[in-house]
Length: 431
Image 1 (cartoon, one colour):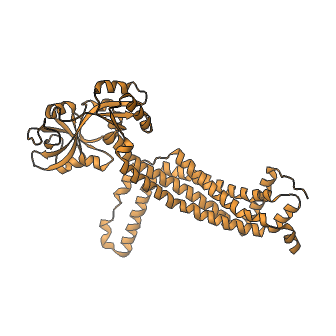
Image 2 (image 1 turned 30 degrees about the vertical axis):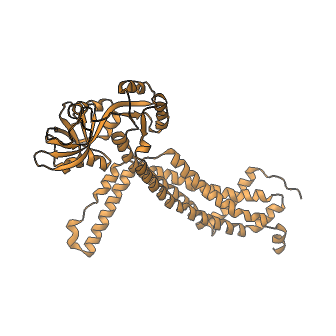
Image 3 (image 1 turned 90 degrees about the vertical axis):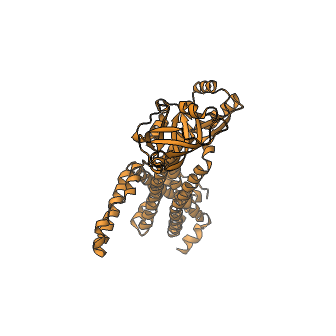
């Protein structure tokens, strides 16, 4: 008998009828668990990736805006002409020269010492470098480099020196060349401010002085580095290629090269975490596969009848594949909504976890060790986590959603392949 191709509407109708019966029968629990598993996996992966992005981007933003910038250009023959060319480039947001030296700082009153990376920048840098202004959080004094002998210290560096706004620190030793003294007791600076950044190494090592101070104390000992910040940090390769073409003698280092090891470690951490959560999808896919094989076995009589009246095996393959697709879509859509909602209110989630941990410890102390009750307190780290906003990336969310749908669809498609080997005549004969 010639097989005619059944319309998609018929295929969907049969799939819907099978699904309706299964949701009321003994397969209902399996079907609901499959949908729940997909939803939980999508929700967990979106929430975890958003939190991870939030933590990582806090570090990355601080590093790019304060430490590495988007591009660092060395061996620039004419800083003024180079800066002028950069300002005419539509991709460049900010450009200015800076100088760096490794120094040993000594607090004059107490004699405390600490190593520091001393960076000389324009005294009015915060007026046009909005990224630096955003990442520099002043906790004491101001970022004031208007006086030649002024310095701004990182928070942990200030603690190591036991310095505060108004203290006098001396750059006792500084790297440079023969044109400047390696050791000097005359490089005294007044601390005008103490800043805090979201990356600990910056707080522990960085200090800022003005370009006028660099000229006064270091002369020609330091070579200028032109800092370039872009409107889009991902355009670093394009701008670097333009600079190298226009100024072939210039050495250009992008933020990706400057922090290759650190960013690589963050990427590995994120990928490992994503792999662990993806195991949820694999477990659910195996569950759907086994459930679909059992369903096809239970439906072999119905399948045989439908094939006998004209449906092809490919049509029946589509019937069960659509069930897997619907399961994947239902779970992924639910997980997408829940994951986005949790990510948007992650601060409330962390506060709830803090309360939950506190009351759990309080209850345990009351039941088993009342003497420890005065020492039970909320974990302050949850407040720190709550202050860091989760960052959702549309590309990642789309990939997670599609993975949830495809994992259910493909497992159903693979399980449905056994329909091809069914022989309707033998099945109906046995009945």
